[in-house]
Length: 144
Image (cartoon, rainbow, N blue to C red; front, side):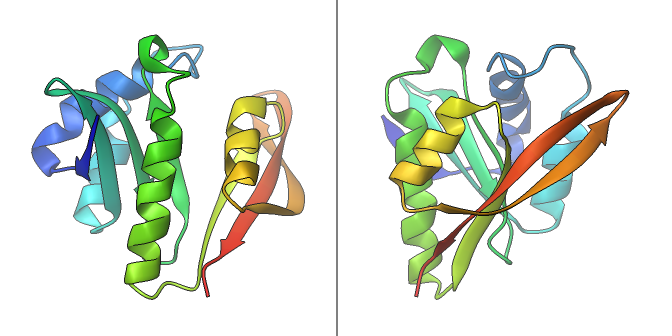
């Protein structure tokens, strides 16, 4: 498994990973979200297996992790953990003070991953998506 900095040319492959992760119930155009991250010089790392991108993680210069996805076929193999460890290391090397993210309270695998990597829940907030209300956990990890 190779973890590397993603390039703008990887966007279509990253979209495939996101859409095949099993997280989204409906298909939608995810490409503009990723394009914007590259345009804003956000950090994007990807995991490659035999030249095929199977996972990725993004974060901005404030330390917010926006997206972390692994193809459903490759889940359960520690890829998300490798990606997370990579950006923790990268953030420390770049003297960032903390990393943070919001995760749905019903996304147990993700919450457990973050807890195992030193993140703590700092707050809860509700978000309305369509007619549904969801609860998100704000999780943070100090890097100092």
